[in-house]
Amino acid sequence: MRRSSWLAFLPLLAFVVLVLALITALQHNNADGNKFALHVDEPAPLTDLPAVDKDQPGFTTHDRLGHPYMVNFFASWCVPCHAEHEALLDLVHRFHVPIIGISYKDTPSKTQSFLVKNGNPFLVVAIDTAGRTGIDWGITGVPETFVIDAQGIIRLHLVGPLTDESIDHQLLPLWDKITR
Image (cartoon, rainbow, N blue to C red):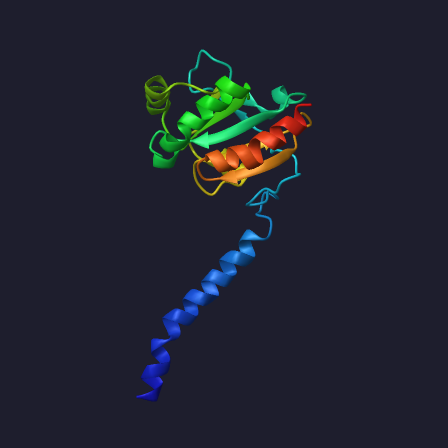
């Protein structure tokens, strides 16, 4: 009976070991040398994505050097993305923040329908169908927003939908600072 009691804890022990291994892996570089999660004050990863609309230019980080901007990863299927969309429109209309939208693991037609229905706050709408660029940027899901300065350095990374609090207390004060 004692032996069977000990064996009952074996799955729990295996789970703890797997969790510790995952945490360790997330703290180290992957085989490509890219970090799983980017840190503030590091250069934005080199990115070259096609536009959702093939008649429009895509997004490259190289083209944005010299200009501060935001990058917002979103998807038409993402409920929190719908919730933050009004905040993105407000940032563009009231504060003239240039936002690059990256449609994450979505289709061009669904992305375009989402933007037609809800409004398009984005200067450029690029598509990351396979999700590789999201990995390069270190996102864990959508929505996620980055503020990039004119030198191409990530100055802020917000996980989850933008809120009045995150906009008023984090994003706008930083935006004011990097655009002076």
